[in-house]
Image (cartoon, rainbow, N blue to C red; front, side):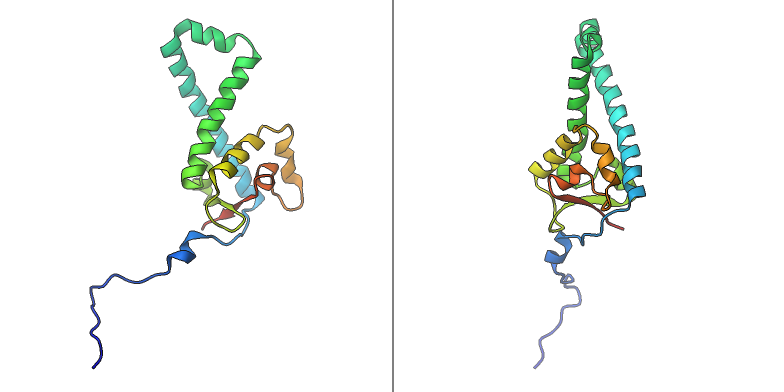
Length: 154
């Protein structure tokens, strides 16, 4: 006799296929739009952090920030780490990548490690890194060095 099929049984799927994405690199125009949107998000976060600094530390905090280029670089470095690392480590996406339908993956097409995400962010501080996109493969140094890709998800 045949086993009865439960019509209310949950559908079966293979989850192993859903954990990785095919490596289809995003086009240069998508990467450029990512950059523009992410810089707007970075500047908005910097504005919020500046207001918080003024509210918490008062005029002393504002004077420290205006005292020279060192504190400004430190402030920008910290803000960039706070913007990129948590978003890419948790979701594989920043605001720009969410809008353009792209995502950061490792070489196998899976979720990048925390070290890879931190490496991507630190590589953004390499002088002239923005010009590394003019190479034939359109992969920036912040992708090549930590061995990650930005791929299309839709």
